[in-house]
Image 1 (cartoon, one colour):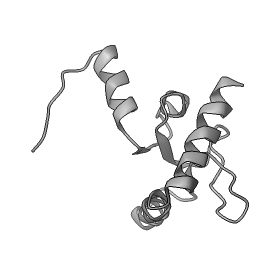
Image 2 (cartoon, rainbow, N blue to C red):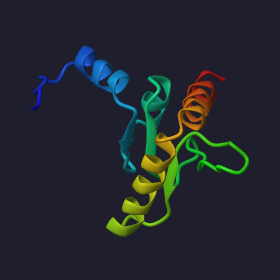
Image 3 (cartoon, one colour):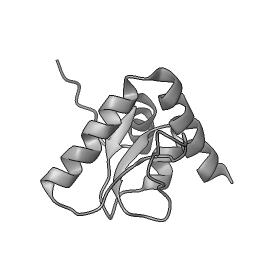
Image 4 (cartoon, helix red, strand yellow):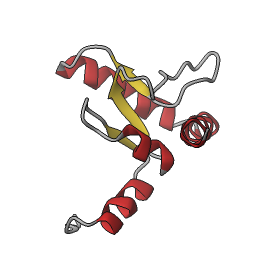
Length: 101
């Protein structure tokens, strides 16, 4: 079951608000993701701090190299963390706060 939305600013915002996480690239608008509560799985960027489960810090998941295995590893880390609601809420809160500062 899939839904196709034509591109518009409103649909883009609705999609971001409905997403828990998104795979980002060098050209992706990571700030828009964070502002709408979407956690980026992204290459190294100044806006994204890699999530550290021991310190409960960070606002996303970083992949260091742009190859499919590094992206896959970051995606798996995000999906495993998503299973823990308390941790996920902290990541979302840190992400939204990092943009609003």
